[in-house]
Length: 206
Length: 201
Image 1 (cartoon, rainbow over the protein chains, first blue to last red):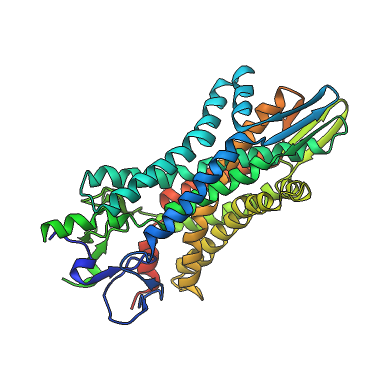
Image 2: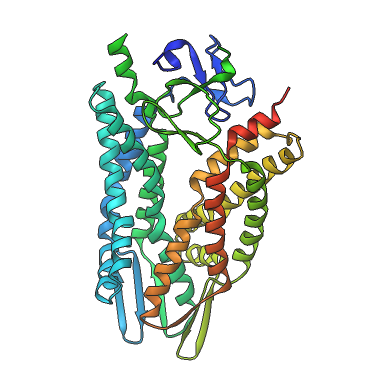
């Protein structure tokens, strides 16, 4: 027996995992936990593309606009995501610079490219390397949260420095764009239905 | 075959027999390799204890300063709520809301919902609104980012250390402990054991 639940007329509850028979009713509810049951997430591909395109558009201002303004008696300075990383690198904390570079630059980019690849392959009903694509999806979903790192750093720096009279740190517009990129890419990953990766394979065998 | 012995993979929908392996802690999907479930001998009682401990740590972490800074004789501190307030007053309300959501509201919802469903189950009872609260738990655990926050604290600490005299506060240690407790919950919590216990005939 090697078939999806959907092909056998069954559906697994996403909340409590109970397997039920597909009912003809328009909205099915799990009889154990009353969660709505869906064979596949409705409108998954369209919603995922919409969120992803919005994230791509905001990725540009997130990386080019200043994320932080610092002013002190010695002058003022503005930082972008990248110049903040360079500051860490030059001040000797190269290991933290690598972590921040990974979380703020690579992770959002990897998420956007990875989801675009998954979406295109699913739309072409491709049966190319499904196990690797499933692993790519898991990777995209699990690393997504780490891009919040810079938002938390900006929040803490702004707070701890704002109260002193000699120096002040203000958050810049990139914080807004970057926060939106994080939320949009996480929401995009959640709206993608990884079961779509496997559906073309079953029809090929059927 | 009874339908109660079946399990559909959440990531590829492959229907599989729910074989109760006593040994391995994690069962993987035969087709796509996603985790089907994990089992642990004392999973539920450990999760109960850890959820209470985490709520206490969460309260401590939110009542004390994370970092304190000394610059030319002036002292300033940052709490998590203070960070939300500072962003809000700098006209970055959406960013303030995001920090409030991912670092305060969602972790609290996750821990509260977990304690709500797990503690009565320890006594063999099904908590009121069990289904909706369980769904809240699943949603909140996706968006609660304590471990990312802790890394953010470390990065902030190092950045400030270059320009001023900075000291870690009580909340930094509390958040680090909370991060470990929540990782332990992740490793021990078996939702299927919970569902089996509260839906006994």
